[in-house]
Length: 627
Ligand code: AHR
Image (cartoon, rainbow, N blue to C red; front, side, top):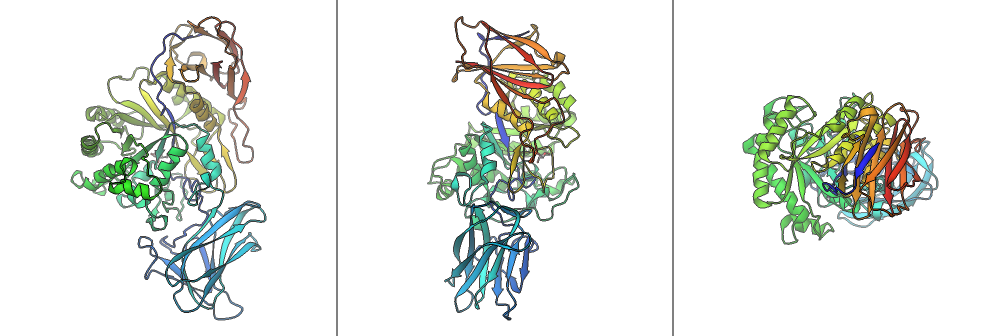
């Protein structure tokens, strides 16, 4: 028997409680959420024509470039024979995928380096080189200028390519060759893939953490994420290597780079679009400690000034008015209103003495200028052991507002740790569960992993006075280009699928409530006995009681949930139960079978102040009792 004491309205549940963690891993940005379809559009990869096949007379040059941060461009010269052609084609990210009747915006920066008119023909071709659609573009300027044309795909093709032919006698210079679907999220030209952004919106997230993850630190300091390189004119954002070229899953992706077409401006904008608070993570001057064992690989404490300045400037970029340098840039980019940034993390997964001695000067500088701004410190990569204890001790000493804990663990750990926060110290920093996922054989997004996460997350909510944010990780994975799994949302170039784990996050996001309510099972606190995990909340806005229960046991259980202290005569006419259940623990949602396990909603009726329910073995259920 479960009892919920509706009269004892407890701690607030923060609006930021259930959120999203975004990182450019598994082709999450370029080739994923960022809708650009051309790989190496600026010819800046170390091998300038990587991703391209050139034919005829094509030169890569960098004299008088259009964009100083991305100086390379191509010059196409006439092939010199009536049966020969000059041009190049692009393979895209695992293909250029087009959908029947959809339109695509081709754009290019071009210049005429010699006298005469210049022109190209742009084609989308299928895997067998048949032309799907073609359009001509004529250039009229000796100076760099942007041109564009719309291509309409006559049929769906997953592995198309973009091909460009020189059609003039005169040579032409081309740079920043780009192809976007016209129909992006919110219709923006430098936009995001609609289905993927929609999936984020549908999570009802409270917080949006970006840009990572290890990517914040980079493989080495030089390749760390520097937000200032990711803002301003898109074409002039300096390309960076992606730390996830190399991975311990032993899959190597030498062509994985970061164009930053989706940079900090776009990420702040996305937070706003999906109704989540932005939570940027910045480098603390330490390169990824996993990959850099030598202390010299890091910035010394004395060398931290530019890193600290980046943090201060970011707050100005997000919140400053147009009279400030960085606030003006934000306004010039199209967002005069502030993004209302309140919190940032400094350092991702750092440990040992190296970290706190670097974090400390950040905290001093940020608090001196922005006294109410919140700072998140890290407790290292693992939720147990000496480094973790040391990390927490140091974060308490430094009085960070929150401590970021990460756990990628097996089902047993998740179930055992559903009560981990019950006994945490309430006097220190709050908890941000910044990365977590239940790993079944380290690969599966199966129902078992999702059920364990659902059970574990009851512990977040019961301890909402302490746990103020949580974000599952990683978020996205391209089926042809992943470095890490499990992940929340999988996609190929045409389709995407929401994992069972996604639906757990969504159920929490949509049913968070505003305050915790005390809940006991047989008059005892929740311990996981009989495989039952539960939490209750009150939503003062919707006037709803929300009870989440996971039955992880092997048996069906009849549970009566008593709402103790409930006023008599309240009808609760719109009460529902939403269940996530699969008889097969190994069941996964896949691109070909996307709805294998999805939430199912049914009405429920209270008898007086009691709700009697039957919970099948291996079920997560959300009861929402309201009028
Ligand atoms: O989520 C994948 C990686 O796991 C993150 O980049 C890192 O913070 C953690 O080790």
